[in-house]
Length: 147
Image 1: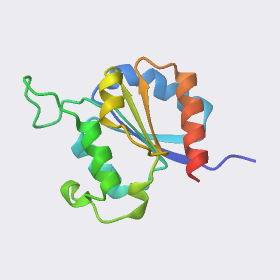
Image 2: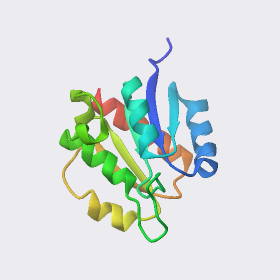
Image 3: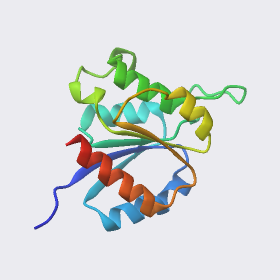
Image 4: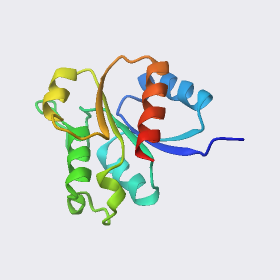
């Protein structure tokens, strides 16, 4: 019997480096992966699809990014979804936004650990680089726990 298909939204502005991991995940799971390269694209995809998990980079160069700024787009997405501050993202109110499993995949692990400090059981921070097999185990565990 085939496992049910899960949907994952992967938000990262560096498609070149995430593609091998995404291909590994797709080849070993029943997970369909959608990609967004910035916060704006992620919001559009969230309007269209109910996801089982979000993976997001912490720091991304969004449309308003200036080289002198650090754009914590992943943090903004997470906080907006968890706080129900979806109006700031122009999303309709959906209760699943507040509990969707969320993985922050980042090179700035210590910054992310501080920024995401709290007791959200549906969120975890993972340091880049991360092995694809570790990601598969983490994704499967988080989706199963949230079900």
